[in-house]
Length: 412
Image (cartoon, rainbow, N blue to C red):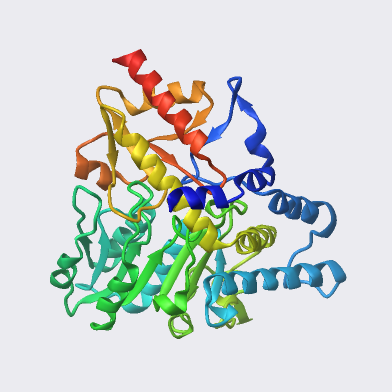
């Protein structure tokens, strides 16, 4: 089955849309396995951003002249594109931010101001990215609230049987990563949400590592909030999204003040704009939004289901290859994982591994991957991470395995 998906997906055609993949690094063909940090951009995205700066640039929501009106229209069309991509109920539920980190900070501030009191509790998981830990810790510090943690086992499986015992009458929010940026675990979000519903608890989903790999329907999930970053889903940097159910967004206070988020301003009183503008103070990254829309259109045209099946085939192929390498420890071994592989070669520091692979033209990430609690769980200082995308190939995986063998020969 895996081989069929590999053969049916025209990866060569896809790679033609990403010019950066055609270059050489250290006189070797580039093998880009750092997609968990940021994905490369198809020509359609780059061309859209360039066209804006050269021909269409004008501030949105500010002017009656032609360029401003066109930029405003493009911006709101981009909002609709995002709405359609994740199947939100209406476009007012889509808020543009600078990225998933900004989105989580927005929620931590606004939700915290409205709904968190001393003694209240927020639940996260042990496998969270720092962006889904630190804002909640800061909130707990401001409000004298408590942060609770769902642990995971040594295979990278979330111990959901612990969730009911963590929930109390003081639990106000569960914020959980959809796909671990270290382990590749795809968490059972629907099951978590169903549990939360029985206790009237809101749920936020960090989809920064999932929205580019598999179809997401926020109405089917029934999540209250969902965040992701543009640059991890083949779009520009500096643009991100927070989806929130309208019933929540209407109640939450704005987290930043300035232009465009206001209705009327006087020294006596300020009233706020309607959704979604209440949460978009100042000049937002409207060019980034246009680029993000192009990225999402590209993925939709390619087919998220096809992308998911192909990447699952790559994952199966890679895991089979890695198991054949003596002394290679891969962290995260649950079924259905995403194409994210964090590993250590016995007796070799991750930084040394990364540097040798770079000399071979292979781009991987080394360190703690903004997930130090995961490193603490396994008792390591860092890992090497190879994170794949739908423009990667089995031949590149074979080459990575050759690179790992080369590292072993040099250091062991």
